[in-house]
Image (cartoon, rainbow, N blue to C red; front, side, top):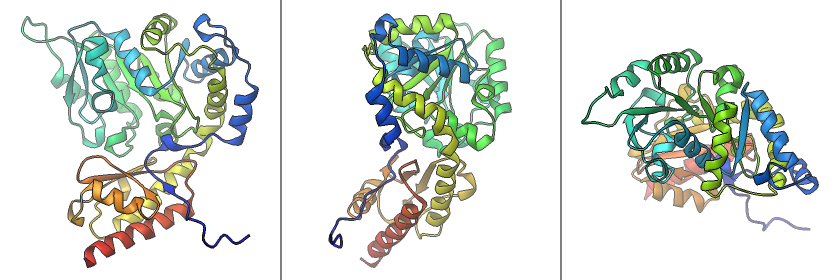
Length: 355
């Protein structure tokens, strides 16, 4: 059969959410033992939750459809209406969760800006509200690790531990949005239980770098997770016979972390190549995980225009603002495809310059 006229394969660098389940996952989903999870009778979900709790050194875990739901359950658990949540201004909970902290929990964000998205205690301290009859009280600190819109930066253990310890001294809880915490673990060389130990709750995603098709986990104390089941149901997260999803999640949890270093190496390769293309501003030394964000101000294009041109050449990437474009490596993108993507980006920039 002659394949010379076949369309070139799409190189999808929009996000690590676009991965497809492996054949092993599909088999496990087909064969999964299931039950009604709202009655806590799905054995596959129960195994996944027990294993997640074990890996993170926690008492309990809760399987949820998405990272957004996991984060919002955690915010509800830790706050009361009328409080503030301190978070970095580019965090997912502030920018990409439909203002649900206000809608569901009745709280508002109090944001700060941190270099590379890595929050320090001094920055948190400057945003804490004293007791007053004029302003909302601080109810929660939310930290993101790795930090998506800050280029996949990983918060060092000593920085995170200090922030948690000092915040706890004031009687305030800490939630960790660890959607990509296994990426941080791989980059820092620190197990996730150690890396997240000081947080009161941790959310992590199975459906990003770990490769599962659906699902995230919320881990914490047994008391918190038991209450979390109430809020999961309130948000529509009673998924019944969802062991078919948890089966893939178990494989992702056990096998996904072992290959994240390859994604990180591919992202570094992309960053180094992009840094040599005229108009792309990126410091490869700051790329430690699987996210590459480039400033394209001097290309003469905005991110929407560039995304469209690249898509026409079968390379998919997302804008994260008018002057920035993001490339994310994952299990379904090879080193060879990264090299092809670099050639296409350079060609598109060259053609635009010529015009």
